[in-house]
Image (cartoon, rainbow, N blue to C red; front, side, top):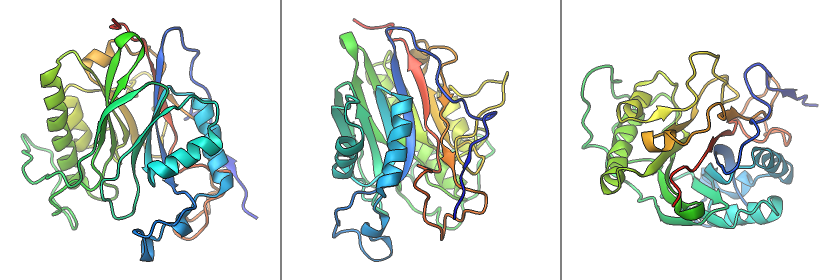
Length: 313
């Protein structure tokens, strides 16, 4: 019988601080292959979707985390489809007020995509497949050398851009990312450089726009791909030199981030960033061959922040 162990309490906060009114809670959560139980004929062979169907027990564990986070706007990674997300919401998140849903297919072979659940209206959702990467320019030094698989010329999982229409005219533009995983630093650098270009177009239209980039970056805080965002003016909200940074992945790595531009950072509620506790598998668990225990919702932990919408109309 498998035994379970909780995450170390010294690295993960168990609850976010109480938030003052009015605030908006924004969170990100990689839900580890959230698949429904309906066969998608386009996903077959080694990546057949039905064997990936998320068990009722793990859905309930995911929902328990999501209810505890209680985000007003929740960015998700590794969702099968909008239909799968609607099924999950209606079955397991009843009463949470997530009336607004976006999940866009970008043609990723494994059949998962980025998505958003929101209590506020969502507008201008966009995730164009196969955005070219070969034209990005690397300035300065410190870049990785291309490795096997880095010769690909397009985004593997295009970021999801969506505008959130908050209360009283308050507007946030979010980019939900799931960068290339594994030993592909060069590829992640290219993806980050391209995303900064896309964000620049939004900032050019509206320099005062609140912009948040969040999700699974598959990078450490000190990686060059993360430097790209810092050099573009984004603030890593989890970086606090006064305390040890909580790990966001059960492998004891920091992979999930919430980045704010200066406009959004002015509205960040200090100290509200939280990495949410969830149950991890036992030490001898092998994700390559062992079924995921129902009590262990995801290999990632949810990260949330609170914003005080000061520039409301």
